[in-house]
Amino acid sequence: MARILIIRFSALGDVAMTIPVIHSLAVQYPQHEITVLSRAVWQPLFQGLPANVGFVGADLTGKHKGFWGLNSLYSELKAMHFDYIADFHHVLRSKYLCLRFRLANKPVASICKGRTGKKKLIRRHDKVMENQKSSFRRYADVLEKLGLPVLLNFSSIYGEGKGNFAEIEPVTGPKDDQKWIGIAPFAKHIGKIYPLELQEQVIAHFAANPKVKVFLFGGGKSEQEVFDTWIAKYPTVVSMIGKLNMR
Image (cartoon, rainbow, N blue to C red):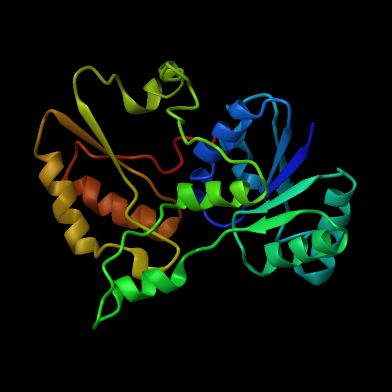
């Protein structure tokens, strides 16, 4: 049995995209213990994974903040006696933790984000039109460097089922034969946000179809104000702000 630490902080989407890879790893290597290190708020994302997957929450704004906080976090992790370290993030915090593990003679592998290829693809002139690896593939590559290749055959954390719909039906209403579309219009970085006036056109298009129901996902006062404006114009659209917890 080996103990594997997987590190990924960051925003919700990037952390969520680790799940298919971690699930595949856990199923294909049931003899190993896998621990995910991420922001504590994302812990519910990993509750539905196999029993050999655990979670450690980092308090990056509290006791694990800054240089001394990272040293404290490393001490906590060191006491768990990991055999392999997989850095799915490769930012300053994770690089420092990996450095400490390397100095302790632990095998470490980090993600290659492929920034050179991405820059060539999007630059204004002389573009190099080559397919780039998905985030899932890049995460899997980290594990392969550690001698833990995985087949990405993940389908759902619910297996063949669909989860317990009864838990959200009081908020969403019955699905019946409607098509449901979830839209999250905002992002941490302005450059990742599709212009809101164009996003509204998308919402208006689907809201006009009685066979489609649109749900808006977001959080915070400014996003709530935008949603309120859209809902006033398109009453069939539903805001999910404050209506569901992470679990």
